[in-house]
Image (cartoon, rainbow, N blue to C red; front, top):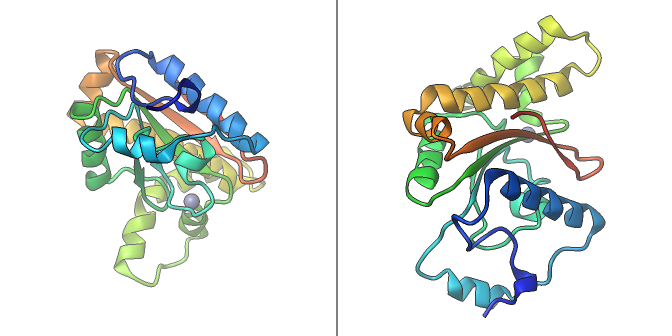
Length: 209
Ligand SMILES: [Zn+2]
């Protein structure tokens, strides 16, 4: 059995509101920053999840090695359905993965997570040609966020502004490019929250909704 103390957000689908789920993530982020993660019986958790999963949260985050979602939100097995792509853009495979999480697994909250000093956004805003078509495809969706940042912001901290702009753009893209996510959102069955991770402090801050 998993003790009450070792539970985080998971394994209790349907019982928490989107706001409560987000608050639980913020509590986990505080524990991460303080270096005080929950004690967990990982073997018991793994066994309890052998045949099922109902992650209340999905995350679309950058692939950056410094922000694994389960670590920075102090979550565990079965807690989060995670899609990672450098620059946290929404492409068809990422959107399809999130549709699966919402439609089949019962995810109620999608967190779109960008972060300080993102290499993907920095590359997109540099204006430099990428060395392969795949890398070009990776930065292409970020270019518009860079353009908006350059128009609306001075040269100071322009990358950070573009990073936050791109999180908001991705939130909008998920709703604009997916009927499943849009309908779930309209029926108040899904919240999509844009957020920003600080490499300096370890803190996650909310940008949208
Ligand atoms: Zn990044």
